[in-house]
Length: 155
Image 1 (cartoon, rainbow, N blue to C red):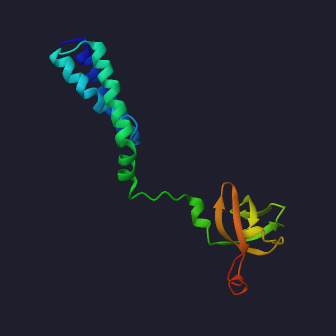
Image 2 (image 1 turned 90 degrees about the vertical axis):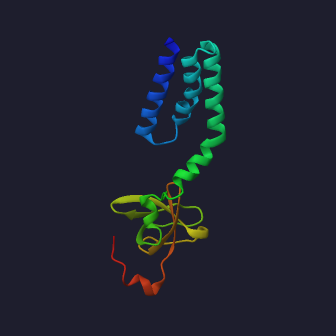
Image 3 (image 1 turned 135 degrees about the vertical axis):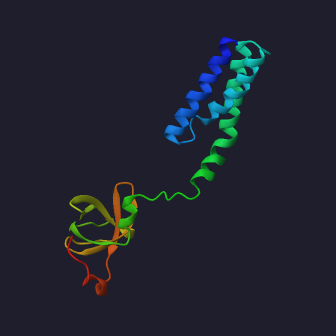
């Protein structure tokens, strides 16, 4: 057997192991890209330079053509929400005032977060707010409705 036969076999095995370890659809393209030069090395049809060119071309075509489709297929059932998304809709007490030009703060589970009022609404310290959404490192909040405030425990 030609030395390149073993090189391509090594590329196939190593890239497959890396893909199995990460499951991020990163190196699978090199696994499939190395199959064609592996066969060519086994038959000694072309020299190693052409094998390398074919490897690069096949891998690049697979990456460009199939990566996004494959990621969408693999991630179609995954839930990409974070733990912070669970805070949306919950109520907390403002610890400092916010208005259209001042960023306030709210304490959530012993962590102080920057908070701004929805539509630049002014909210005083001590008021109960509901988290509307999270934008970057800021909580977008609105004043909680009065009838729901009674059941809110101070956090």
